[in-house]
Length: 506
Image 1 (cartoon, rainbow, N blue to C red):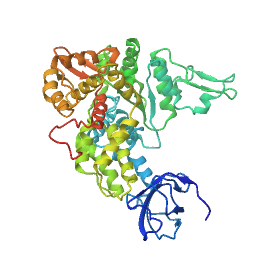
Image 2 (image 1 turned 90 degrees about the vertical axis):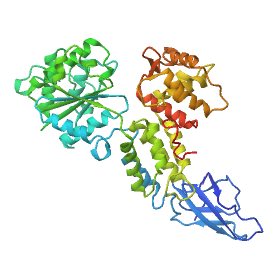
Image 3 (image 1 turned 120 degrees about the horizontal axis):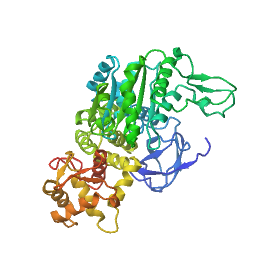
Image 4 (image 1 turned 90 degrees about the horizontal axis):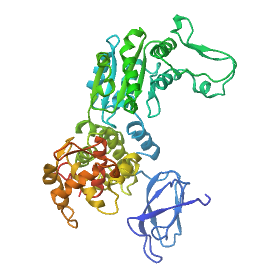
């Protein structure tokens, strides 16, 4: 066996044998070691042989005698720190169950939404009925829409998914729906003469179609009227077999009142299409009338679904399923804290869980049950990998030349309760005083001074992270920010949520 490349590692357990000492047990942990040579006399923190960098942490028990200079590592390596689970197996389990950067598309992973899926299914049984899902950012609207669409149509008729944007108008959104049925290479290739789309095809084709010329690009034109927009949907229906589900996401990004009015008029006329196309609209808002103000009658076409944050039981299931597949246990205290920190947002549970299970896998000792260190590393990992916009907003709110910690403590106090709005007296007495009691090196602000901090946090100079509602009432502008603030507090040793329950994380 030839020399293998080196990789950083460390000795754990007993030290390597002294030159003239008796045989000793020297346990090592490494990253990427499948076979190679372990020098018996290496000090701590020195490099070792490895197979070239694959993330395969292996714990080896090596018995060296004084005359030995090295130990040959067998090709099979050693045992994982989660018994029977290899690096690749853990990656597969996590990728199938914890997806903080991707939407869920199957009902078995969409915990706590069974009743809502049933509501959508029954609404689709009503002719002309469309769906509007609304709620806080990060609560799972897109995952619900995609899962409902796949349940209704199956994989043989994939849903059409389009997003609204700050620079997109109504016509461009409808154009994107039509373009979704045209292979992307046809849309991206250089245009050639003699081809294109026309709105003058026979009525049997819905009034829109492709005219073929020389090889070149194909693109649905931007509709210039309501009738042309409806023609695009007829075209989509004609090109598909059976029911087509169209998901229009991020409706809140349509800022222009005239453009929202076009959407409302479009929705109101969908039942007149007589086409087997159903729509699921999604948006961040507290009331669907924010989109449909100009056409209240459009609301009669919509099954409106307010998607709320998940309860703790459903959040725990996300992690318990993974733990069962890995044959390990997540301690109940950790589940409680994760449920509290995540504030009902599954996105945070996915982030924390992914980092926590990797921490368990990377432990130098075999793990069958999570510990406080794994939980804390899960919190740190979630903070490092969370959405950049939330990090930037938090830093803009708090990172000032003076009073940085005061602004942080004010946000932590506001995030201590799941109430959407809190009054300054209740914040001060129930949360702020308790937080400051755990920070003995910090001075307690007077209530009036804390109120001034919240008034500042409403301003653009602080990212407008807080909203004031008059008479000393405050809330986070976006509920998902409360979860991020809880992560920051937890990382600083402040376990928000239930003061009497520190969940064994000390």
